[in-house]
Length: 272
Image (cartoon, rainbow, N blue to C red; front, side, top):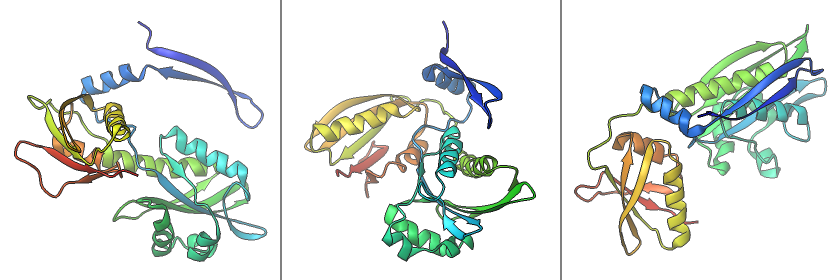
């Protein structure tokens, strides 16, 4: 059996002088190898990252966006995409202009960054500043703001692509350390999950589709539907606390204040 789904050759570099090959492997096979090895698995259910970046040039300091520096935006999207980090840029509208200034982001003002990011409901924020080039190099800093923490990294690089890659590495490594889960022995009989607030078929399809995409959940069997409650039994490679960590990334799931006896996981589904 071939585990390579497809491959393609790519030209890279400023003049296409580099030849690269990209291979796409069967994701189910890759997952099975990770689980068999007992290695930590960072699932595809990942928090999005809101990015505020200010660049300093001859005309002063400005936010990096599609209008001011489209090539930088593409480099950032490529760098974070390679590390599997969902990237979001602010709207840079009048509300953002009133909430935070380029100078505040340049100072990596944590309070200002968190305040300006509230409208986006973003729990993971990245602030950055970059200047140059000077003597063929650029210099800058990143400030990654996950919940209840702040991580800084100073960077000197030969190109903006390398600077972008350093920011992606900072965030991806920290996210993986927080959210990657080592598989555990399956709970005998599976885990019982109750979800209230499933009021229609659209809710049901959204819940089941999301559960089926979780790499550590092998199967989700519906045992009973009572009013708006969906009662399921999960066969998985994770324990209840590990699944709770993953469930916390879904903003439509709110932990229930109480759990019935024998129910390991209980949530309220928040419909749009």
